[in-house]
Image 1 (cartoon, rainbow, N blue to C red):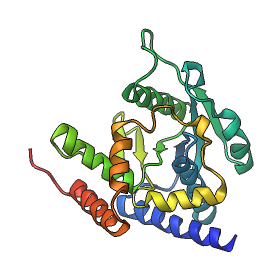
Image 2: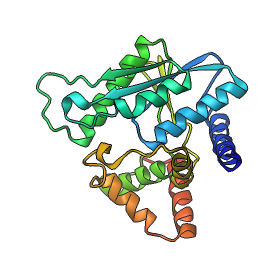
Image 3: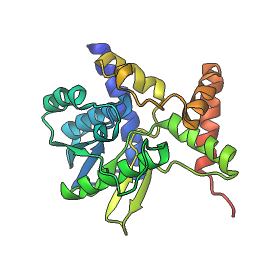
Image 4: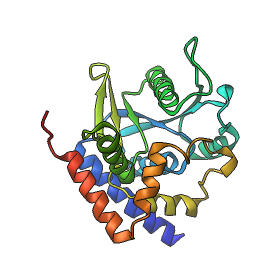
Length: 238
């Protein structure tokens, strides 16, 4: 347990660094944390919960968008006991599709509809901030994808405003490595069982590029990731 707490403290330090650097959280914020069911979102909620307990100043609401009605894995039995144990308010909302939406959903439409459901639920629950569990490796892969597939550089922003500033979308894990997040999630027993994973998760462009980056030795991977993040933060022309 002491080792687990030390790892949690190190991860929370990285979250706090991102919060300060990018002004992600403000006093009085009510934050909707998107819980996909995977390790990243569960670690995000855990760390923000720890931070609120220490420093206060913000409220948390966990929101899971349930896609089981449209053929996606049903994570409710997997998530409910954990969410109940936290003592935080949470909501499980259905993924409702517009008329004529073709099934099965491709990755873009799945993400778009999930994001819509998350924002609508956040609004109903009185939240002004939505937090997602993207980390430094996600940011690096996003930069690489935009260069390879779009011929331009696009950044996974730490913070964005939506609907005229009515909501802020924040990514508090943006400075943390996936390996550290995964180590903590495994220690807590938060890995998604294989049968509940998205059936397309391993075959997307993002997954292939993430695997490509993981193929480099750790020191090279760290340098590549740092360079991609640096490119993403630099101003671009055009």
